[in-house]
Length: 151
Image 1 (cartoon, rainbow, N blue to C red):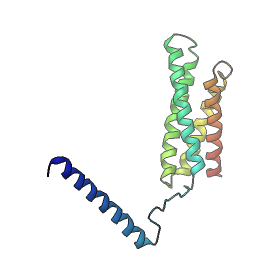
Image 2: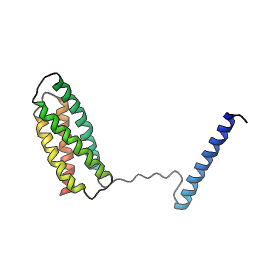
Image 3: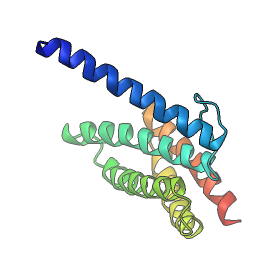
Image 4: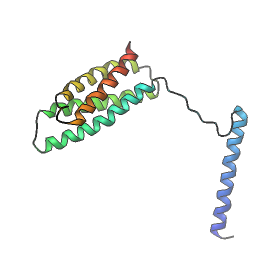
């Protein structure tokens, strides 16, 4: 038997073992072998809003840094700092919410303040830069999701 044949046999054996384990587990729990867990998380809308804010904020920060590196609109430096804060805060609450941390309500209050500051600063540039408008709007959505948890 050469190496190729041995690999085929070994791979086949591993596949049979995996299939057997799945069938055994399904029998043990009385679930079909192809059963999928699609549980909705408790704070899914907050998780989604925070993730969107992080994604939009990163694009905004990149745009901001390009403008600043060209020596244009130095007033956007404060905006860059606010967006940077927002990215950090939203990433943190997204992670806490994913794991249903008991600290989510307390963190939500902090995130609300940070999102409010970021939105306020982004609104100053929304007419000139579409990404600033998008970031401000994502901050509003995240703020509102946080507010639901703190209420």
